[in-house]
Image (cartoon, rainbow, N blue to C red; front, side, top):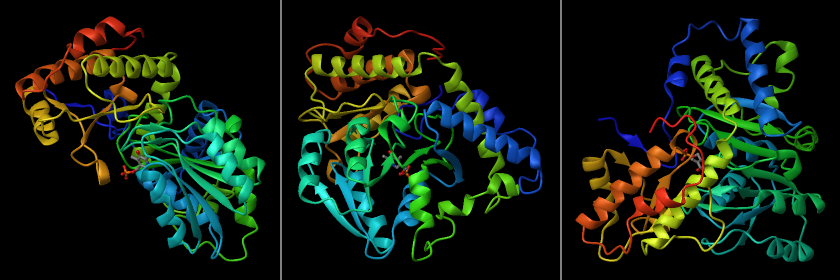
Length: 385
Ligand SMILES: *Cc1c(COP(=O)(O)O)cnc(C)c1O
């Protein structure tokens, strides 16, 4: 029996994506047809993200986008506002310092979405920042931040914004231009449902201007976003593009484009999962800011996270994730993003958890599967679960 990879990234990869990675390859440095295909894919992603910003696909796992944004914008001594309400949120401070910037943390509790009022209040006192960083969905805790409300506030103070949407992009509504995000980062292995290996970035004109106006050179080659300037006219990439990864990404993006109900289905699956857990008496980790791509719940008293994960894999062939940092051992994460956001697959998680929790002696007041089936209101389109 196949294992269901119901983790918050990497996610399950559809067969047509795996097959696209086996297409015949060319020399991506010399074959101008490939530059055209790359460019068309970038334009399609830009249209799905509702942005006029330039989209680039970088050869490197999701983290590369975060580092490239910080490397490209930060000059020694630059003050950077780091919105910290999660592990990835705080993590941006490391990239800022690494490139000589001075991170200023605005820290809020990790179990709530970042409040626009708190941000506004803070900025009234202090807004001398080159840019600010924010995480759209902070995956270890499952918190969704409202980038459409927060980033425009920063822009009003003339602060550029870098948003990590690696685990939200294509699973949550994201209108990059309405949110006025200057650099938004996505990865291939989360809601895109391609294998890990690629970063997607959308870079605004304001961000490009900031890079052009630097007094010091960007202290990186691989993480230098301006290395792509003019690549299309010059028919030249700064480094050899991973062509098979890009063919896989193209198939995954086509799947998303054809799937008219993709965002509604993420929302319907996520809300049914939350309701099933709560009805069973299991606590969700967060108090608000619930994401549609990952649900994080507290391990019931008297049960060990490791035992739940182990039984889910061994008996039910479902892979769930624990978490890390301060959340290790305390919570379990269900990744219902991308190909995982299918009612059939999520129902298998609910049934597996019902059996597992009961076998491990946890008290639950109602079965997860029954509640999920009762309240799930999305369609079953393309359900291969
Ligand atoms: C997955 C993820 C990344 C990429 O990180 P990896 O640990 O290398 O997969 C970046 N940001 C967020 C919020 C993520 O969920």
